Amino acid sequence: MDRPFSQKTLDFLFENRLHDSREWFAQHKKEYQELVIQPLRQLVMDLSPTMLELDPEFNTEPKVDKTICRVWRDTRYTKDPSLYRDHMWILFKRGGRMHGTDHPGMYVEINQDGFSYGCGFYYASTAYMSCLRERILAGDGAFQAAQEAYLGQKVFSMEGDCYKRPRYGHRSPEEQLWLERRGISFTADSHDFPLLFSPQLPEKLAQDMRLLFPVYRFLESTAQEFLRRETGFGRGDRSPIPRNGRGGLLFSQKIR
Image (cartoon, rainbow, N blue to C red; front, top):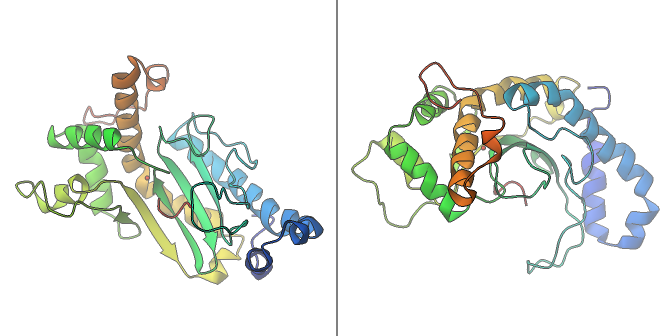
């Protein structure tokens, strides 16, 4: 990573949020580009080969609103009137809309506590989650591969609000982890600032995110199935996720 993050990156985001002023931001836009945007663009480019290996249809354009979030917040649907955020993220997903809800994605966020990364949805609809549960209950091969991958690693934790009352008590505890959720994501949090500021960060992220490849493939193939049901055809009809050896189709609250 030629342009790694530094403490100055986090200091700028914190100070920008503290001032919360368009005028202050305009006066320090050069610092924003050098300390925030350039390292984020570099991280996108460094991770793109690994991400395209996972899904050739990922958008990997290293630009704001393509793979890099905006530093300014959309305050139309929140009680928080703050203009700027003190954290930033990159997101690899299909589709033209970075915040679209139709496909899962792989993300990395830098924040004042360190960084987080993983796989999941900006927002998983109720209908999508119903489709996902159907595939799990049917013993889908892609789910079996995702389940095996998730249980076989210790880096990422499954997240997402659960039903207040269990609905699938007759299923195995491992399946209930998925079935009882109203949304789903897989996240790792790190407070390793030396790593965050190191040129070795992309290598570590790529290594860990490979652990979630089968999980992403299950979530994305479910998205394709859901789109086919909704529209009669889906993007996956043109470029399907590869199948694994078992015959199954080969993951936030963090992103806010």
